[in-house]
Amino acid sequence: MSWLPTVIKACYFLAALLFILGLKRMSSPRTARGGIVWAGYGMLLAVLATFFLPDMHNRGLIIAAVLVGVSAAWWTGKRVAMTAMPQMVALYNGMGGGAAAAIGAVELIGYARSSGLLHAVPDTSPLQPEAWAVNGLPPALSPTELALGVLGALIGAVSFSGSLVAFAKLQGWMDKRFVFPGQRAVNLLLLAAAVVAGVLLATSHASPALIAAFFALALLFGLMMTLPIGGADMPVVISLYNAFTGLAVSFEGFVLGNEAMIIAGMVVGAAGTLLTQLMAKAMNRSIGNVLFGGFGAAGGEAQAIEGAQKPVDASDAAVMMAYAERVVIVPGYGLAVAQAQHKVWEFAQLLIKRGVKVKFAIHPVAGRMPGHMNVLLAEAGVPYDLIADMDDINPEFPATDVALVIGANDVVNPLAKTDPASPIYGMPILDVSAAKHVIVIKRGKGTGFAGIENALFYADNTRMLYGDGQAAVGELVAALKEIDA
Image (cartoon, rainbow, N blue to C red; front, top):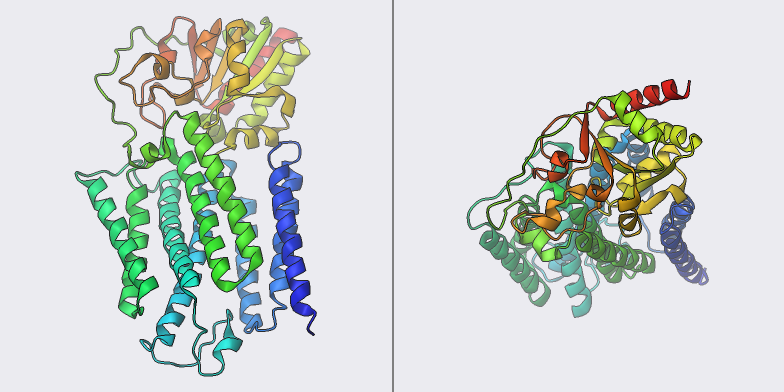
């Protein structure tokens, strides 16, 4: 069947088109669901086509592994709460990086075997078994393939261990930040040692000890690089490791000669890189500062916040918004924790029926991952035309009668504009403080995820509605219905 390789390559090409078109459709909330489906069909086509490779062996084992993986992903995907979606994304992204590193490990072990540093025993790997069948040795890798294989293994290993740490931080299993004196120097030495080991692997005969040391250093560097990063930077870190995983997969795809892996990896890598840059820009910080800047260490003595937090009850807050002309609702991670998105939309609908103009304001880094708040609001059925990005909504705050903040903290903190000593100084924020009145729903008087006091809560035009997000919004709904009765 001389035509089979051509058909397989055509399937890979079609899968790549589906990946790209799917990603394009994900750029809009209206078409995002369809984009995910298109990309899913592309991945299914690529996987099925791979099973027909002429030199593919161990199909039974591969099918069993795929079934186990799909079943586990289906079960966890159905059960995971929306609040846990960021850590699930971090975990799955880490698995992709680990898979790329595993492919690199197989190739390097095969390279060591061909160099005579490992016993030449027949290998049962499904990657290139037919070429190995003559003498039990893998085919020789070109210098370019070897270099890309090592680079992909390095990036994949860093993404794997780093993503696991990000998962642990988001899951609450690990402190937000772990720092110690000389940490940057230690991390730099780890990276340098991993790079040196990689160069030796790519330029000389690989030995089992050198391979093991290379992966141990890469995994340790990924872990140590992520430990000092605080929770407020997790959206950027998740995006960065997503880009790492894509690049690692693409490099290993080149080594295997698999076009689908090359294209899919490059698409993911490019998208992750662009998203990382956008997220860092939204925080007014460079990627290097996110990774090595020690977020949370102020550059001087912070400004003293004067005044006191002024509470308000739900009935008074409901009256303020019931007779307002414009209301802007600002959701944050607290809304996700309380699962209050459905109640918020119910409250917004009651306001709209009264003729109040309602909008939702989304900060680019609100929540724990890119697009977190958009997903929550879409889940509740909020129309896309009521959701505004930061740049679009900020000019409207001075004309807003009431801004309702639910669980957001750092992204509405005016210290980002007024206090050069604040760790978030220079970070673009939602100009909630410019509204005529501000109502903040918050569990208590504590600081946000970044551990920074919020001057907005002490402003003269701000009132605090303390309580669980869903319960507090439920009280607003009840109070508004009493007004309408």
